Image 1 (spheres, rainbow, N blue to C red):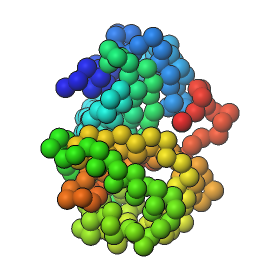
Image 2 (cartoon, helix red, strand yellow; image 1 turned 90 degrees about the horizontal axis):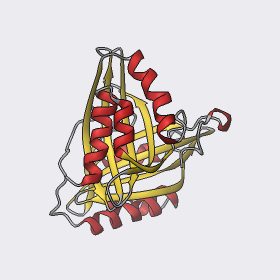
Image 3 (tube, rainbow, N blue to C red; image 1 turned 90 degrees about the vertical axis):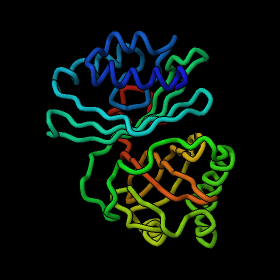
Image 4 (tube, helix red, strand yellow; image 1 turned 60 degrees about the vertical axis):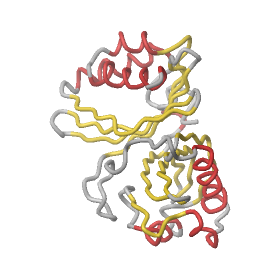
Length: 255
């Protein structure tokens, strides 16, 4: 595990799950800590102002890191959180930017409630987890980039089947199984318009995109996580969060 991956894991497991927020944020962040989780202010003090009361409110914090990978200075992390014996359950997807020593400089996330029932019947967070580094990272990223551009942004559905496996395993709670379920959702008002791709990172068979959709009058920050197999997208997870009004932000915003 690279130093960046290790530091991200530790700020989660020591700082949040372990309740040692102050020690962790001072140890695993760098000369700045720019925050894009809109309820949290920048810097170590912003982190502490949010997470020290969070730890006090939630004495039981069961956090499971589900998937992690890195792409240069970028780290992706997805986690499941059960608070106070399941009184609240959350799914988070996070992206971090790190310095040459692996210290965290910047953080983006979306947070959504864990839903036990999904349209596809697949669990919202389970499925393949191990990065297969024998798969060509550049090819995986190119596939997902072209899918995002041609299908999600340009609406070229004639090319849909060249990117998506027919038996696509779908974990997004509101999308039905298979390529047909995804196609149906993409043509719905709930999907809306994919307006901006902010970043795309990958390692081996996993690729993550972070961007913005506009649907049903709302701006939505969305992570899509894809697993590539045999030259097509074979599995998908999605985590989205409505972007709150600007006056409620404590930092520069989701992007």
